[in-house]
Each structure stands twice: as C-alpha cells, then as structure tokens.
Length: 198
Length: 198
DNA sequence: GTCTATATTTTGATAGAC
DNA sequence: GTCTATCAAAATATAGAC
Image 1 (cartoon, each protein chain N blue to C red):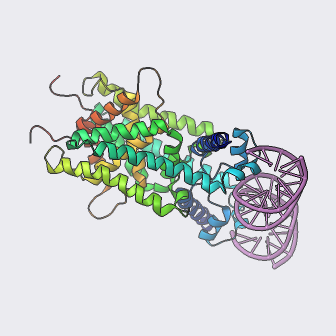
Image 2 (image 1 turned 120 degrees about the horizontal axis):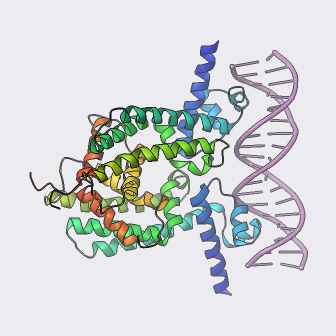
Image 3 (image 1 turned 45 degrees about the vertical axis):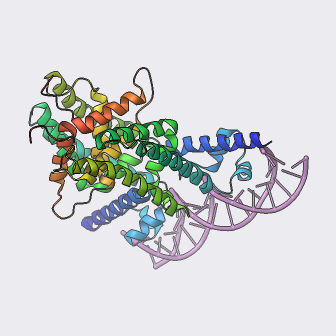
C-alpha cells in the first residue's frame, strides 16, 4: 500500500536524520540506518537510490519548511524590530519541528557542498541570509538599530546563537520555545547589562 | 635530527587540523593528510600511532592553550563585566591562534566522545564553562546583569556566537580580532537597539 | 625517516530469490 | 518490500626493504 510505503520512507528519513545529527553524515553507515528502522541495509535501496539521496531529502525538505515560515513572517509587513523578533521565533519553531535536520544543515555544509544539489541549497541559504539582512538594514536605516556595529557582524552573531541552540535547547518544563525566542530577541536587541530604569 | 622530526610532526598536525576543519575528521583520510605534507600514508605512522592520536593532540594542545589564557584573565581579578569582556577577547585570540583546532573542537565533539581521552576533554570543557558561568553569575549577584534571563541561556548564546565566529571571521583589513571582541562584548552586554542617549 | 607492498576491515551498493 | 549473498572500492594500519 502507498501509506505503508510512505511510512517506511518517513521512518528511514527520521532515523537517518537522528543518526546524522548525532554522529555526522560520514560517520553514519547505511547499516546503522537500516538497524534503527529494523531492516537490512540492502532493503534501504528499495526506498532510496543512495545514501546521499537520503541526506538530500532531509536537507531540502527542511529548507522548504524554513522558507515557507519566513515568507509568512515577511507577509506581516512588520517594522524592523518586530520583524526580527518574528524571524527569530520562526527559526526556533522550525528548529523545534525538525531539530535533527537543523543540526545536519548547520554541521554538514562541507558534505552538502559535494552533493549535486548544492546549488539549490546555496540559493536557499542566500535567500535566508537576505531575509535576515533585510530586516537588520531596515532597522539601521530607520534609526532603531545601532550603526557602529556592521549589520553583517550582528547577523552572524545572531544567526549562530539562534541555529546552534538546537545543540543544547530541549523543550522541557516551563521553558518553551516561545520563551527562548523572547529571551534571544531581548538579549540581542536590548543586551544583558542591567537596565537603568528598573 | 630532533628539530627536523619536530618540524615533521608540526607539519602533520597543522595539515591534519586544516583538513579536519574543512571536511570533518571522518571524511579526512590518512592519505589526504600525508598528501598535504608530501609523504605517503604509511610514513605517517612513524610519527603517530594512529589517526586518532593526531586528533587527540590537536584537541588537547588547543584546550591547554585555552585554559592558560583563561587563567591569565582570572588572575586579573576584574569586575564581572570587565572579566566577561576579557574572556571574550581571550577566546577570540585563542581562535585566531588556532582556527582549525577551534573548529575541530566545536564541530567534532561526537567524534571526540569516542576517543579514550574523552574524560580529559570533558573535564577541560567543564572548567571552561565554569569560568564563563562564574563571571556571569557574579555580575548577576552584584546587580550589573539582568536577572530575567537565565545565566545558562545567556552563556550558551554568547558561547556559540564567540566560538562559531571561526566559521566566518577572517582577519582582513582594519577589522581586527580586538575590534571583533569589542563588538561582541558590546552587543551581548548593551544590545543592538539604538541607545536612547545618542 | 620514508617508501613499497599488502593485510584487514568497513562501506556503499547490486543481483536475484522469496 | 525485504532478505541473502556478495561485489568493489576505500580506509586504517602493518611489515620490511632501503
């Protein structure tokens, strides 16, 4: 049945993503992936033509989801600061929805560079970057952000803090992704030094 | 001669670190390392007993350097904010001195976890983390830092921003490491929103 | 200290039975 | 759609000549 086939594919994809995130793509063997799904390595090739095809699907479907989230944020037509807050929030939600794919995308760029689909990924990456830089430069232009720190430098610090949070953040207890997003936005925009007025 | 032997060892270590940083430890073969040094793979084993031994030396000597830099900062006995600024500065100088080792340490923790020397590395990592958290908690205690964002959350955002800068920062032109450290400290402590008083 | 040659293991992938 | 069996390539590591 089609449904069962789709389930197997999904199981392979999520098991592979988990392994890739934990120990890297190169260190993860097709035998390990098959083990987790409960089949033998040869059977994987009924669902995917190669190990690289699995990597590709993990990364591209993750990027498609991320771009969709960003486009919804841009459609809100918010002022720079609010737009940046929403981009942080959307990014952290995307990371929560697919933490393993996020790690793979963040850690394995040198591997992805070797895939035939690299140009696609590169284009999506550039679009994501431009979304962030657009909000930052708009805030700089309208006077709501500092001008003594380069937008590119701010972007990179913020980006690494946001994306690498998948390495340590685990949704537990009362510290939700919403709270994390709020703290991140407040920290990067307002700083950590105590406010004068409280 | 002893000097020549030492030179060969250094050449192997730096070529290996460069490769490991570029494409990951697992993706880098002993043949590739030997190629870069200008010898055949078998000859590497006269200098190191295994590929893992090369990884170990890169990581442990990096951590030794980092701990030394941190201890010099702590010896200054600075107030929390100034101490944090110096920790950022010291970290970025360590990263500049050994960018490849920094990348390896940041990216390959899952590989390092499999080495027999993992407990050593783990201890050093814990010490480094405690150095940061000590400064942050001191600043929280004396009222110079906010109390509405958990020290652990602040630490992790700051840590990722600092260490992952090796992925993009290249010392070029007038934007020095000193300037990068200053921008990083100012950003995390004062924020990116425009100051009210300028 | 480096090279030649090779042992051993692991890995991605395939062919064909069921 | 999965398994058995296996191939071919690649990788770490070793032994011994020079």
